[in-house]
Amino acid sequence: MNVILHISSGDVHDWKHALSNARNLLADETVETDAVTFLANGDAVHLLVEGTPVRGRVEALLEDGVRCCACRNSLQNRDIEPSSLVDEVVAVPSGVGELATRQAAGDVYLKVP
Image 1 (cartoon, rainbow, N blue to C red):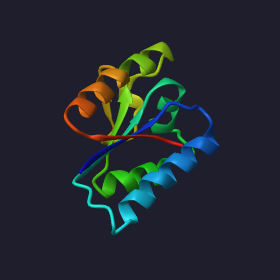
Image 2: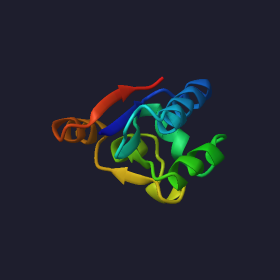
Image 3: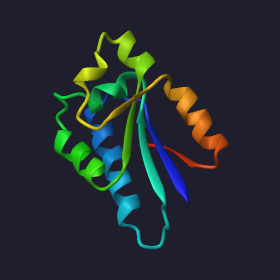
Image 4: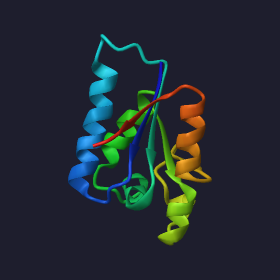
């Protein structure tokens, strides 16, 4: 199954919790995942920029094949350039559009934390 994890909080504690949820999903041998996407919109886009305090955890997910996406609208509304995202993080046109598209394609939606 394909899974999309969605975070919108700007709170660092929530980011850590959400990243732990993603890590737990990957580690759970009873769940067969084909693809995992981690999507940040709203204030959560700060989670995926170069200066994030959880950069190592984000990079570890990327190394494990998790697709990490940031909402371009949220970036623009916060004056954040897409070029300031952690390497390999993808800016998608709109977070809600990505969520709707992925759910229509059959991805399991999980709001984290």
